[in-house]
Image 1 (cartoon, one colour):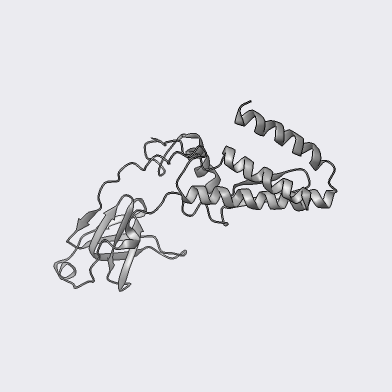
Image 2 (tube, rainbow, N blue to C red; image 1 turned 45 degrees about the vertical axis):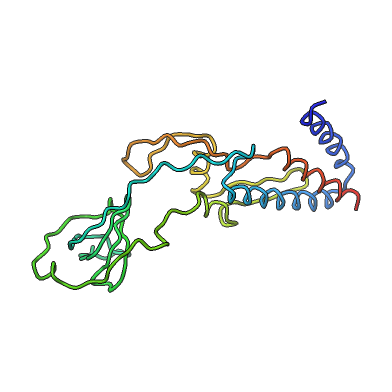
Length: 223
């Protein structure tokens, strides 16, 4: 008998045993199952692996940020309902849709979305010669592990009742997670050409996960 077949038969036996539990007992067990599964899925995403143990397909290499050694001047929406403000930046870099540089008015490093810039303005000789801080390729701007935020309790939720336990992504990230889970196509940003994303299975139970769950359930029943 194959390992999977034996596992399925044991799961069927344990499922029958669960029916003998009281409703409060099943709720307690299902809550524990949900917590355990959420943790195992989060740990696996952190390890950048699919349920079968294979590694997530690596990101496509990103173009290196382009550095600017001249001043740029543009209108950008204000944070509230007020009029847009003029931004003068020195020592800037563009990384994809993000423009980061030293904002003269703010007196520090700031980032702006390229596609939200309302209008490019001319730069006077006086502004071109103004002093400004320098921006370097800081560690915070370097590439980090995929789905780092998605695996956090804020987005990866769990829940249970007396009949079932569940885990899943909530909010806007649920759509993003689905794109990667099934290897779908999507526009990276509004109006951009759709990109075919590699399948990276964020959620899924391996045989080891199922065996651990069975061990946990049997221990609960024995106690």
